Image 1 (spheres, rainbow, N blue to C red):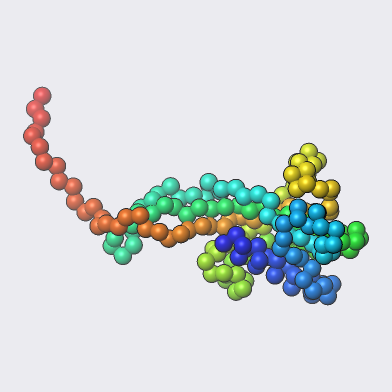
Image 2 (tube, helix red, strand yellow):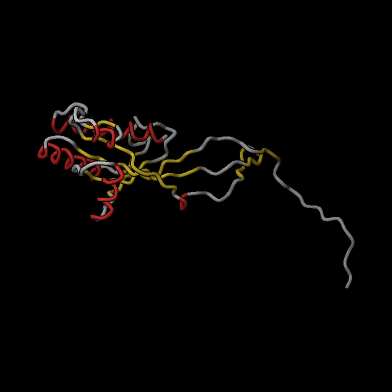
Length: 187
């Protein structure tokens, strides 16, 4: 689901850049640290996954689900937040112009569902993008981790990708009656 989600958003932003600047495939899904090492890399905006975190607030604590008068035991869905870095290695002014359009793109639409975006995989319930601001220390740590000098960039948090293997661990009948057998206690 992570790959499908990132490919979807790359394609949506590329359509937007094509409309605004007549730029074809301005965003490429790739590891930015690999691009930093390659002096011959294409001059583009690179979309890279730089971190994942579990969204525990969205997690359903129940492992039992009622389906067609049966009780199904399965592990709950795993919800992930994906941190997406958009970084440009282009001419400075052109890169800033295109990064500005990425801000505009997410300002006009930051929630994607299969209803409002038919190109989104129906297995993805919803993607919500929010700008994730970093202080100078965090920014330095990220670019140090990526192994390179700073490129103009912006970080977005993509919430919530749900992962559900749909594997049923057990299946049974619901409990309809409880019978207690034993001696009456007289104290």
